[in-house]
Length: 71
Image (cartoon, rainbow, N blue to C red; front, side):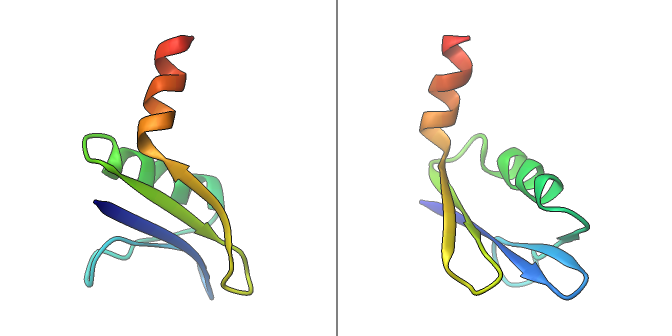
């Protein structure tokens, strides 16, 4: 299972997928879009953390795929 974490960083929002794969984006939505593209063909989830480090939101890739198919 792939887990991509999005955390606040001093220059923006960092997507952590693995050591060395940690791009930083200026806003949270760009980070979520990047993580969604990276996780689209794998099972796993995206965890969005708030400024204090707590998990604010979990995006389950299977649920997102099913929601897109319903539209």
